[in-house]
Image (cartoon, rainbow, N blue to C red):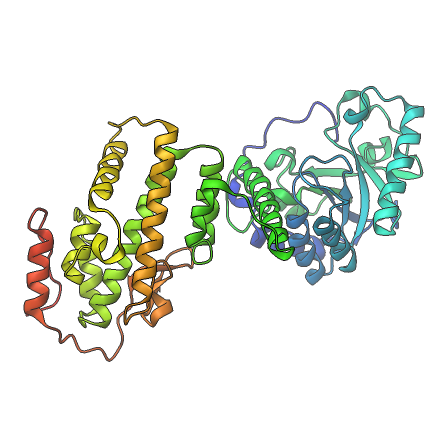
Length: 460
């Protein structure tokens, strides 16, 4: 039963429940065991299920599940909140999403936030619902069929008439007493687990409430799902800002953080992470992350040369770079492969590099404290180092900047568990492990003379 005094948290719930694959399965169960109806055509006295969504967090997630429902043949009702702090219905990108949901055959309702108005009387409620319903109609050319309360409390749940302002009341006494209820509020099943309800299928009629923001591609805790939606929207807003300036030919005054543009195209996810760190002034983790990117760049360049020019077999290269406990400074590794310091080749100052490398080492071990201003200078230095090394490397026969995936220059790479390409090289089927062993052994000896021994996996 719907009540302000909700049941205790359902201990049968797990984060694994709230994936899109599970959602598809639930839709299938519902379609098998119930006639699924909408609020415009409720067959009172018969068996049915109403499939409803309160849009609290993400319209994008709403579109994802709307597509699943459409494929299965479910018509759902999406309750939209004009006062939502997570989306703006009048924003072009969000408006388009709602229109797409409607085009898939779904309906809309009003998700009414009484708290926005403070204390609301029953008479006042009629007028407010009419206004907000009219607003949705102006936006989407559809008059909402019903309304649900956002974060209902005892005072709002006391409004139990069948309708207010011409809209069906999802929390009416009729619904409370005649229709069973199942909800995923706050990211867990508040009353009963929906899968169990649909499998048993003993309720003659049922109102199912889900919030699309909880349903993701993979399991994650509720707060992470909220963060993903909020941060994803913020990132897209910043992208629109940047794209708008480019489109209109205006300067993007990004100050020092514009140095990150050197790897924006090749590594967009890494760019967004670093952009956030820079703009919130988190220079210590930013400095370490940029340095890690620079070391990765050096490693990739060296891997590319070892494979394509030295002809070292992929499994040998992988064994060298993946060996547990191997600690090789990027400068020494680069010198061993290219025969010259990268500072000289790319025009960087060796002393300055040594200074920042020392600070990096101290920070990693928690032994150094630098002012934010000083560390911002360090971040600028590392970005310049990445850019200069990329410029130099692109002019070499390999024509590879060390930022892109190794597959971009014809080196087959393995896929990681999440489906992305990693830096491990894939062995070519007809590859013959014939390469200049003396050169390779001399290289390993030179590189590892101050560190652990690398075991060559190729039989001599």
